[in-house]
Amino acid sequence: MSTTCATKVLPAALSAGFDETAGLDPRRWRALPVILIGSFLAFLDFFIVNIALPAMRTDLSASPAQLQFIVAAYGIAFGVSLITGGRLGDIFGRKRVFLIGISGFTITSALCGLSPTPDTLIVCRVAQAICAAAVTPQVLAIIRVEFTISERPIAIGLYGASMGLASITAQLLGGLLVSLNLFGWSWRLIFLVNIPIGLVAITLVSRMIRESRGPNRATLDLVGVGLASLSLFLLIYPIVEGRESGWPAWSFAMLATMVPVLVGFVLYERRVIRGGRTPLIALHLFRIGALRLGLVVSVVFFSTAGVFFVVLTVFLQAGLGLSAFRAGLMFLPFAIGFSASSTVSGPIANRIGPRIINLGTFLMALGLLSIIALAQTSHAASGSATVNLSLLVPVFFLSGLGQGLAQPALINTVIGGAGVTGEDAGSAVGLFLTTAQSVIALGVAAIGDVFFASLSETPTTATYLNALTASLACNFVLLVATFFLALLLPRHATARR
Image 1 (cartoon, rainbow, N blue to C red):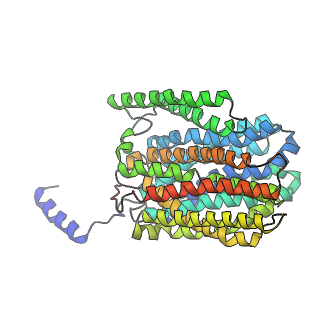
Image 2: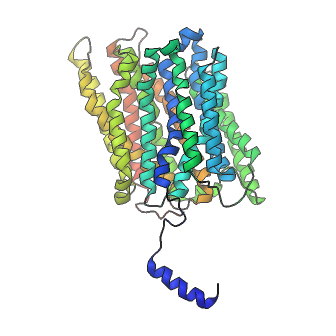
């Protein structure tokens, strides 16, 4: 273009104003529910297995250790593979990796449902989790690169709603499918139901999602993948399995070994960067203040997320004698509150910024205090320590409202804030998801220990109430810490595309 032509065009463009949607997919809002199917399925299968364990034990003659691994294998493999999944999308294309991952997830779901033995099911669960880890980072990475700065909080709010919906659907759908026992398939239905959903997702994603990848062609850092996966395995495995085994010496040895392996990974990644190659994790991300602080807040916040459902599910079923399906129904108000607030968290975050995290954690803490007060009142009211379950309905709704406000905003702070470019979207997403997954496991192990240690050898409803109080008090302290840490997040941050 000549200089004369340029001087004519540039002022015209400036006077017309900058269109931040230029170059973005015009179908992005219609495509968003389609890609959210992938993250929904990944998190659904993380939670749904718990409710089917008694049926699996009967049908497969599974030992307690095998049942434990059926649950843990998915969580461990999922957490270990997330960073690699995010980077694969940056390199080979997010749509391509999403389609490969969701296709593999559909196939492995069928294999899980057809597994003849517990050991076969464990192997298939590992494969299923690896496929899920290829899908999940692409969802947030696509949101990161295909939505404007102002649209991103709304899209991430809908992503958060899909996570909350998955956790509650797991309780309700899992209990219903196992109870119906259609065709005598019992627990197998919780896996086989993924097949039609996966096929729909494959068809729609192929038609509605356009390809995106990091702007620089790169190769996968295989040594980095190995070191990162090993360090994460050394962290997550003893956390998940250590408590169930009574914290034996090997669990502490693995945690200690993780430190030098992690140091070796960081040193190797620096060597890769000095050599002009693409590392598995873009280490410069840690120099972004908002992202670094957001990860710290995430560590504290997500350490409470998983254990809340675990201890309350055990309390409702073992402590109060509710059926699995009825216990799942008790969480429906939480799901309604979470879904309602997460869908509006984006517009609110655009107005008040990270302070929405403070509002959300305040409501969550208020909900915990209400449950603790109800537990103590019920304990003191009568010798039988009965609980008025109707009082839990508004409290669960309040807790869901709070989490639905805070969680999407926290995700956007980490992956959508200043300094995270489209080139590093997959790396940032994988880093965040791995952090969240790891601390959820840590929270379940640590605070779960507090809960189970508070039970007597022959627990009664009263001792379950005491255990619930002790564990939720730990959650409350962590939420207070989250509240004050979130105050340090910058009020305004200019994100880059």
